[in-house]
Amino acid sequence: MNPWSFDYSYRTLSEDFYQDAIPDTFADPRIALWNGPLAERLGFPASADTDTSLAAAFLGKPWREPTQPLAQAYAGHQFGHFTMLGDGRAILLGERRLSHGEHIDIQLKGSGRTPFSRRGDGRAALGPMLREYLISEAMHGLGIPTTRSLAVITTGENVHRTGLEPGAVLIRIAASHLRVGTFEFARAKDGQRLLPELISYALSRHPSAQLSDNPALTLFDAVLERQRRLIVEWMRVGFIHGVMNTDNMTLSGETIDYGPCAFMDRFNPQQVFSSIDESGRYAYSQQPIIAQWNLARFAETLLDFFAPNQVDAIRIAEERLDAFSQAFQDDWTQMMLGKIGLPNSPTQTPLIHALLDWMTRTRADFTGTFRGLSARVAAPHSGDDPEFVRWQMRWRDALTAEARTPEDIKDQLNRTNPLYIPRNHRVEEAISAAVIGNFAPVRALVTRLQTPYVEQTDGQADAEPGPDGPYHTFCGT
Ligand code: AMP
Ligand code: MG
Image (cartoon, rainbow, N blue to C red; front, side):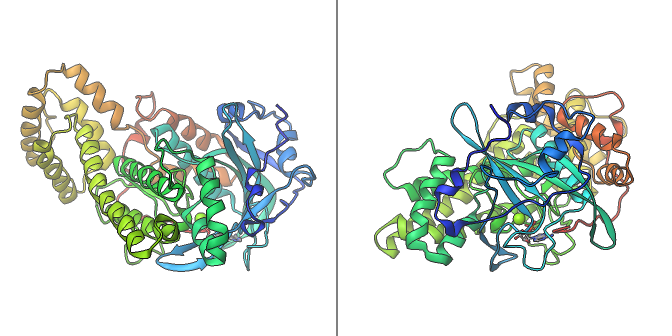
């Protein structure tokens, strides 16, 4: 395989869906992070050589034919408001065709302006690109569908943000960059012409196991299911995406766009980190409701294809969106019961709510509390809060009704409750060091987060919450 030769299945779509866009070239690009195992899977060199040729291959020379990079057009509801958007600081370099035929997108983020940049510079600062690399790879380590990060390459140039900051490019890998917003774009531009081809393209990129003679319904059902599973997984690990706009909701079911996201330490269902989310629209406990809202926007783009008349089409969409809530609730309950080591039995659900209530009142560390359960299967810890001890007594009664050994229960608990998540203060420390040239902490953190369920020596600092206090994240930095 020639690693520098790409496919462009996206170009089989009408030209409305993209604009040609050439990545900028940089005088002194250098690899800051390189994802060896992922690189190998995609046919790139497994290790980033110590010289700069690999960085230069991506960013040091103009990309010429047959490479045909492009910026994708899309729209989206941002905080509830519809807008036409598009890749303003991302460029699809090309697609890699894997051996079983699927296409994977290889995208540069921060490589310069595109026809969709409006007043933006199309560039990215090193800090946020490292953050996306760290958190996306942590998500992958946790076993949660996500876009991946192949590399962070420093550009050697500064970008203007609050002050001057070192610039960088992230190489992002995705099953595709199709989003609910791509469908909203097609509908706004010329739905009758553009939506049928987009539906069939989306099904070819993301085949559905369900066979049906209505492609729009097949696609809708598949996306409902993928998004339901994804949000349950975010809830499992205390992840708050922070900007669940419809342009950030993928057809593939992968987590995308690591801007203002963060993992929650102290449990608070209303937790928000994003500095611009003043109303709490994208708070932790809102995520399933917002997912359903976004999927309703998706349904609107497909209505004309669900049934020959509007009344039937709306009924079909509503039935499915209602079923989404119920199915989410069932999956969530099963997931939460898994986190306390119990089988999926409705009689046990009060135990979940009692624990979450106690955690909310005491602001218990989300990750630490659940991970700590495996050490409490036999008995409470001496320092435990009396109310937590009483909860544990009920919990242990439920566990003993199970025909499983304590070792089996502990194993199961430790496979669903991670020990390490990207703790906000640790992420900040690692990024601050990298921005002044020391990449060792960020590399160590990436490595640690590859196996978050397994105890590691010297891992204590990543297993504990940081100092209590407000933590703010930012969009589009
Ligand atoms: P995001 O918050 O990354 O989802 O971005 C929202 C929109 O703003 C997208 O259309 C981006 O392409 C665009 N955008 C964000 N940052 C920049 C930038 N520095 N230059 C140009 N466009 C940008
Ligand atoms: Mg986005």
